[in-house]
Image (tube, rainbow, N blue to C red; front, side, top):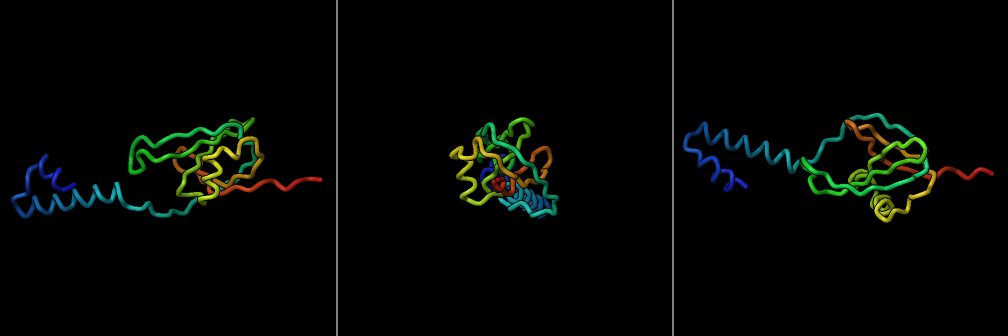
Length: 128
């Protein structure tokens, strides 16, 4: 990556230019390759039957091209986002295989900007 950057900007010749180039490279690397820190957040719960599951991909940012799913709950039309990094492998696999369609579940999620990201779910206990 630095070679391409230097082809565009030219090779730094002074100490100041060298320092600026190093800082720019650090910023680029931290944006695209750094893990997102874990922030404190409130966990919400909602109950609903999964009506639809839509496969999408991130269009920009450090997750560009990665898959995620949007689960739409029946009745409320509430949209919850399922990301592979927030769910257990088995859970994300269930989402990918559309195994949750028609199931009435309790979802735990966090609000992240405009999204509601699923952290976990479990089935409702059967009533007699």
